[in-house]
Image (cartoon, rainbow, N blue to C red; front, side, top):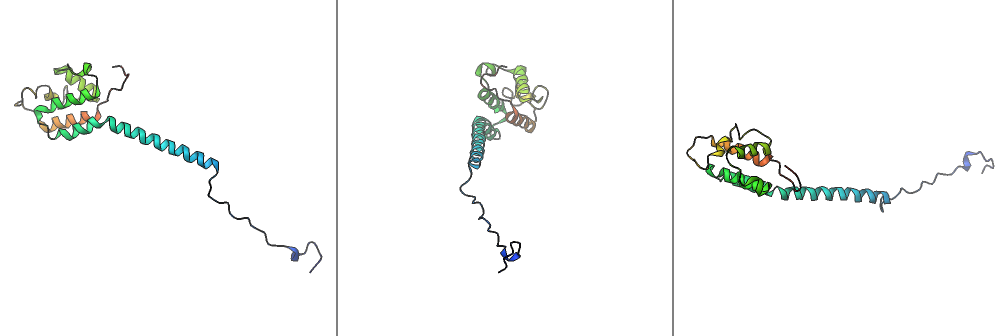
Length: 154
């Protein structure tokens, strides 16, 4: 062997350390996973609560097709009573009822639109009205109306 310290014969292979194991995870990864799990759990809980709060809408939409035209006003009133306090909704009739529906639905379908017959259809089933348009207006209101939350002032 050559005694020269700069000789290439004296070189040895590099010893590569083994790759870092992926398990167990470092504490930072556990914190990140916990945070993501909390976010997902919070989102699931919020979605479940929203789904529960909208149960009355799903039931009303299921009943809509089977309800005769004369019963649509009563169906809409029941939906409104599910979403607002009785004191605000129960005594509404006529034009005030239609204005309430337009205001809470964010549309103008009842005072001057296809939902206008809703005012009299319960009392005069023979009155001429476009049943499909009336059902569409009622369905749109059931889907789009803004529910009054607890503690919210009108």
